[in-house]
Length: 611
Image 1 (cartoon, helix red, strand yellow):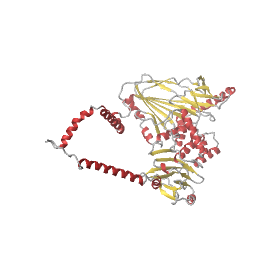
Image 2 (cartoon, one colour):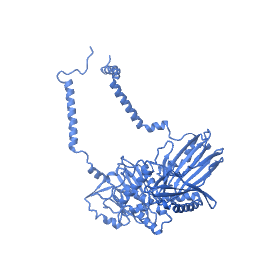
Image 3 (tube, helix red, strand yellow):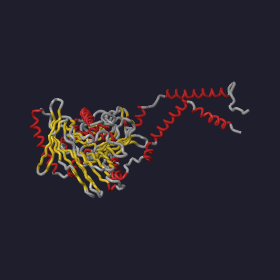
Image 4 (spheres, helix red, strand yellow):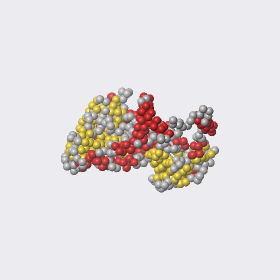
């Protein structure tokens, strides 16, 4: 004899086909199935991709590419490299592929040259400065590109396979580096290195596009100075007021075809010297062109006599010095805080647009000392609220060079209006400092450096490294403990003779502590005062910090979690009492319905007897 539960299950199973016959039921099931698929895709997408697509380049050419880029992953994890294009990797550089030094910009993706005269912003030309290496008969080709932040260059590695083979030794590798020289503002360099480990001779065509500017061809001639040949091209860019920017470009003359023997290498350094005039009237063209040509020829001869390694080392040292300072996001908990990729992209673009007068050999010692003093103690920079959540200053995507130049103008205007004018005038070295100060809400005063970030945004974890202070570098980090409570970590890196640097937390009630250069550094709690004052003070004057506590005139000092609890105490008691009362009334009403159905007058039998 079947039990009551078995009979009930049998009846429901018989009714299931009838349920599917209904059109609305089929629609509901289809929508539910679609939502389940979407949820599965997003929740296990990484597992799916790991099972069906490894993301790594395959074949002999892919193995070759991995071998020549094996250090890229380590550099990327350290924040020293950003992928531009690589098989299986997301693009990290959030904008155009370019190099620059504040005087020239080269759009690698579009092969365009942008020039600036100093007093006039960047203007785009139709001149194509890049050199191309091509080969016919290639069976497969795989390539990867990246920005090396501390070297200030774009590196592209191409692996070519000319015949069917499973060995990476049969692949020919082409490495190209592009950079606008930091110390020599008129010099653009493209290096080409071809490695042929195979047993066959490979031939490559080396070419460049014919130079033109705004549709007008350059007048180009071959110059020969001290047994060295190069091309000298002249043209101009028209201005809106009828004046013109004159441009003279000296470019190393190259062979049109290169043959690389088996088990050998081929290298070429393509040098371009670019001089741009101030805006001039049409009546002064000849004299200005003559002066620009002489300047270009003189510098071209100078850089052609240098060893390529020395030229690159000069450039790398300056970029490495610039990226001693930086910002790293450790943990982001909201949608409005920029990622590390966005921050590094913005810093790279802004530094590429900014000149570096500190390394200009023509700068006098007096002016150089004045700029360095500004870097070591930037009085009143940065005033106002932090720019961490200013999405127009840290855009997630930039469409082109014109948009980058607009962003550069916006950054300069913002920093100048917030007390950082002297740092902006110091060029790239001052710009990276002021951008970092603005991001973290740091401000220099007459006697100390203060950290005045809004306590409400300390749920994010980030690090500021290389803050210039009294010829030394300070590292400041906002970190989170196991309970997600923020605290401050501070250390110092002495570059000169060690000096005493002290710090105290908000309110300075506790005795200031001397900062150390050890990795463990010092940990400070986040204390929020009422009225609101900075969360941390740093100074070389111990007496100043000791006296500071008596000048703040505070009503109370709270731990960060106490302050947040007072700011967001939750919903009032009356609201929760009302919700609980409604839930209780609903259940009482439901109990009454069930009671009347089965226990009241005319109640139905709970189980039907089988006749």
